[in-house]
Image (cartoon, rainbow, N blue to C red; front, side):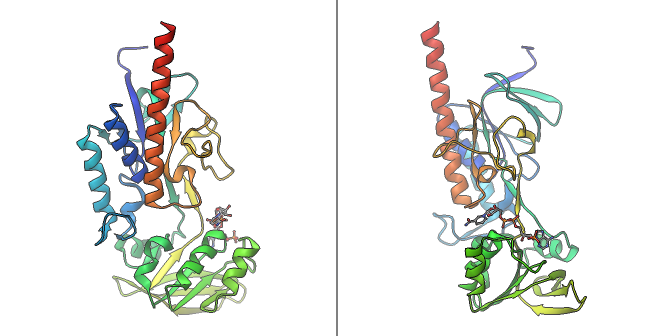
Length: 322
Ligand code: NDP
């Protein structure tokens, strides 16, 4: 190996709650972790306004503040937090190779993947505007639904997530209007029936979003279009929820790690192990079901503990062999 290639015990990829929790545990276990923050330092929580459901914050905390606190906590124990984007990996041998920004090669004994997932959005200018303003566009009903208690909201999507989120919102909100772009649901029948049988959920089939309406600061409604008739109308709403799927940020691991058809990495049940020894996964990169900051943090802890045990086993094998 060339002298110029850095060798690390533990490389953590991603800087959401999973990555930073893994970093806290790994640094306290003397694994000297190096954490690469990726394209969106802080992860999905940086686009969330208030986090009120993470235990330990009785008054809530903003997503960006929480990520700064997590970063500080990881650095306090010695995590080396770096800017950079992992662009390529090679998991052929016992030493795992990664390339940062296509150029710098690093060799790692263990890797913890915490690259998360990205919510898909419609891509409308008005949607992005109110999303960036924190003014009423959200891709997570469990995170943000509480802010719309007794209000009217619109949700777009017709899969299991949209049904689950619409049902969740129906318990908090006065009215939920669900926009389904075709004349059928994609969701399982049981989920579809649940929304169909909920009194305060109105389902509009063959309906697409034309524009998210607002006063420049917050959402005030949604302009929708019937794609059969071309007719448009405005629906008053203070919240616009997008539930059209997530994309796990796992493209660079394709061909190396076992994944499901959407690209979620498959972990060995009850552990953070992937199919490659020494490579672990935590957070939303492996979770399409729970997708919460607290569950991501929990699996980040699991990944660090599994990595520590893996290293200890490898080191003891070397000791016995020598
Ligand atoms: P899906 O891909 O299953 O569904 C996405 C939905 O969004 C589809 O109805 C799709 O419409 C719609 N959509 C996509 N793009 C647009 C757009 N531009 N405008 C309007 N609508 C759009 O994603 P989910 O997140 O719902 O589910 C992902 C996986 O997770 C699935 O396998 C699901 O079963 C699973 N899941 C399971 C749960 C459970 O079991 N409790 C809960 C949540 C998810 P169209 O149908 O027309 O393509």
